[in-house]
Amino acid sequence: MSDISTLKEKIDTNTFYLCLLTIVTAGAYMYIWLYKASTAIEEVTHIKVMSKGFLIGYLITVTWVYVAALSISHFFPGLSLLWAATVWLLAVAWCFRVRRALRIYTMTKHGFEPRINRVFSVLFTFYHINYCINALARDKKKSERKKPLTN
Image (tube, rainbow, N blue to C red; front, side):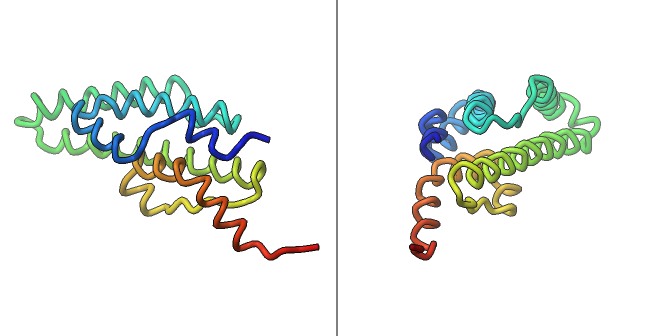
């Protein structure tokens, strides 16, 4: 059985630094983190969370959002909003797939269910998933304290 902190060690990103790097790189670091986190999650949990086609489609959609926001939004203001909503929905879909993979992994391998809030997953997407991955060891300790001792 692998240690619960294996996933945190593989991704190795503090949530504050993830936010900061995303701001400093104008969002580019988020896509690097997305690939890095997806491969680490798949490697540790053995559950597929993102295909190469999903990543390519997501990056194409993000690219078109920026193109639409910069050039087309003057002529079609709703198009930029539509593309942005599409990017956000794809991010939420990824977060829920990772949420499901983490819950299955922790319940089968470590015997506890992590607290991954659905609302926060929708509102904060990648940042919340990163926070939850970093908190897995703490969540396991909390669940062990709550379990009654049996003989």
